[in-house]
Image (cartoon, rainbow, N blue to C red; front, side, top):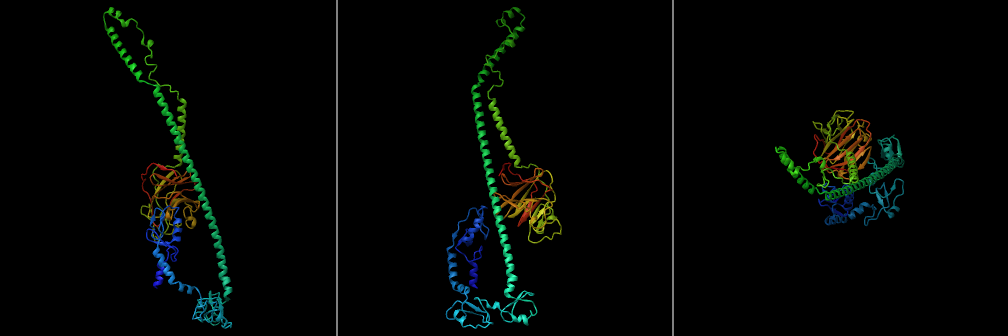
Length: 542
């Protein structure tokens, strides 16, 4: 018993076999090096590594340290039990008691195993049935009559002996030989099952290849788009820099050519002179002595100021606009600014930024799966262990933990936010009311009547429609997401509510039915946000 208990303690929790080259993680758990390597390889894409035993997460791939002490314990255990294991694995002659000799045949009547020497001396009578060497001869005899099992009862589906046929409880039943029954009942079915399994595996391999090919094409397309956007912004920055340099250079040249300080000074002097003359002439106008007026030197050559006015003193500057000679450069700069504005407007339009109030989403308890608990305010769906015994309803989902909302959307633009509480496996999205309520296609995303955002184990994130899975390049780290619908434009978009808000994916379709919001959760809760959460206006277009 102690040996069996020790053997269980020396088993790897992944392969359930004795440790092979045991290594230790930082959390203290031990695994075979090959087993933990395979697990970590599957976690490479997620970028987050965790212990299969305690789920402790590591930001970087953990370094595997060989557990020398455990390795020595396993080797000692194997060496101690090697002889017993070898003897259990081989069948030795029953009569060679002084030194074990491997058996070549076993006699069912004698219940003994025979080597070559004892086989030659063994009885050749028909009742002594010889078989391949076996250590479980008792299983080949009838438990009631202790005779060899030679027949198969088709009515009771049991292997029986001669006595069972003649005087036992199987008397009068239809019998077949063991070889015939094995061929008809078991081997034929096994061949059919094997062929089906081979066909199924081939289809799965083809599908794996198809999904990998779609993933490769999607990654190539995303890479091309990223390069295109990067090139566009590099060109925009270059054009803006050039325009800024040209405009600043032109302003500098104009500033050098146009010096208004001298003009202002001359105009001030002229204004003072005119003011002095005005006061003198006003005094002359008020004088009563005509002789003084006629003999005044300033009245010798009177003329209309409008006729004799001149801007010689101001150098031809009258305070109006200057001819910069830069109309062509200004037009080109304006054309570039308009082009940049149109490009940015197009990108903002494609980003589907919603500014209206959030849609009022209330969950329909008549559609809720039996293991979903719907809150009193119809805003939260929680997975629980144990049925809720909801009343039967043809609208209820039967096979997946899903619930729809009661309101449908057939026009306009709407959005709603979801908070994920304690769940690492969930789906959120929208569907037509005609979606199946049972079967595989009732799971949102698995048919052409629904669209969803999905996060699975190891934070695997993707979007699904018509059973086509599109892996997201970056995993979802926030516990809040947003779903945006533009019904007339045929756009359904998903965002991660982080800072800045990150666009995840946009489906485009021609909607033919009203749409309902759908939640699907396992091991936690999904909550409809009651209010708009304040996030930065900076948007990330990915």
